Length: 75
Picture 1 (cartoon, helix red, strand yellow):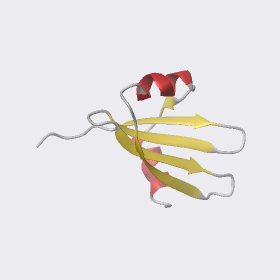
Picture 2: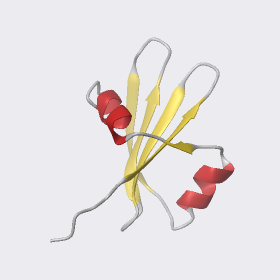
Picture 3: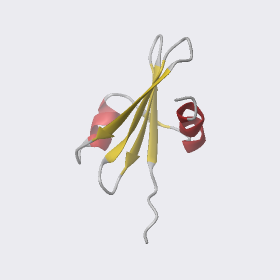
């Protein structure tokens, strides 16, 4: 059984943050939107094979899996 190593990305906007978890094997993942009041929206996503280029173009940076998991635990 192969272990999946997710990749994590983050972008900070003026009044909210977006964190993205991507499974590079099947292009599935989770998007978290963190609002200024601390509310976290979680969306299960299906990406295409261009997701990494799209994230780079949209100025997302890599982030820590721990940061993603901490926010995910609030959903």
